[in-house]
Length: 437
Image (cartoon, rainbow, N blue to C red; front, top):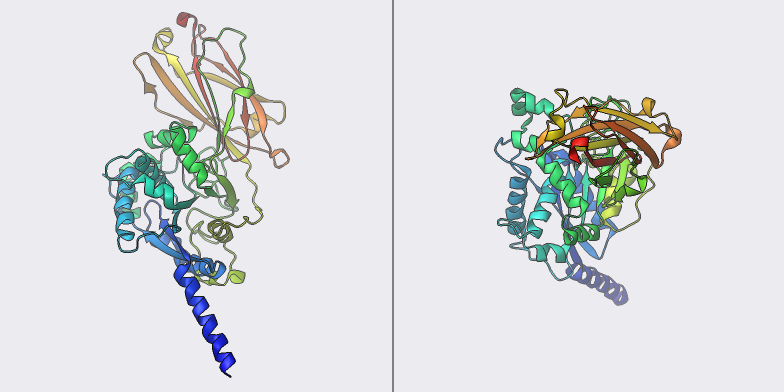
């Protein structure tokens, strides 16, 4: 009998010894626009239970961060600053040990809040967090349906004050998520490597992007109707990976840009799931995990196992969803002097061609034209095209575009470039005229 007691006492001591000396991993949940911690459903409870049950050597703690979405005067940078305050207060009474870590799971705008918090902390800006602390203790970052590339549906909120009030949507935070906004351009510059040390840090986080691909519901994020989305954010925008081609060199008639000039920027692991931005009808919300998922065998939430395995450093489950859509963003800089010959300065002509599929059938008409940006000597136009590849062609392709300006003096641009399903390709060019030589 004494032997049995000794065994029980030994096991009890061992269990408590492990819990005392287990490393801690704190995961912050950051919600999106017009939302609150309730947008995550039972994620906090479910993930906490499943993570702790699966990792006896690590104690997981989940905490939600609520911010003042709906205030017309606040931007995502303001929300990032408020997270800095929250973050400091959270660890005030529970300092991190040498081996303790923290991570972030962000939904929608929450991903932009996270990126701004990380970037401005890296820059050492006032009101943000000590980046040395972040670099030492941050483990990973997972985002779900974050519009890194912008979204068009937010125009509904910008046009309707009543809708903004009803859904608690702030004007400035909406503007931050618009396709051509300064915020979206800023995120793109960051991911292009404007600060190489910061991008290296991002890559060290092994970032996960969960993107929603909704079935049996109409695509709402774009008037193109060719973009797969989660009813709010296109799959191409929810990914931090993209193609980019930039060429502003002097060129001559007959010159052609090779597809080799298209560079691919990989910043995250991207996983598509059959989920909506928020739960709608019979489609689950991309981060709204139901309480029954506390028992994993009873759970059919499409994204939960990806979140779980990611935070446990385990191999991700097999991806079942297929992404078919892509976006081409055409950015043209034209000198003002060359436009003085024409009153039809917006009448550019674009012709897409492909040897591998019918470009006319699978690429939409342009679905968005940015208001023109001005420099002292030029105007910059941005055009967006959406495409949806046939199911038998889900791979990388080379496309060609011929670009003609609004006057007979503009010299045609002939460009080969790369596209692939699930990604945006930006083509950043100058368009010259005879007067520019």
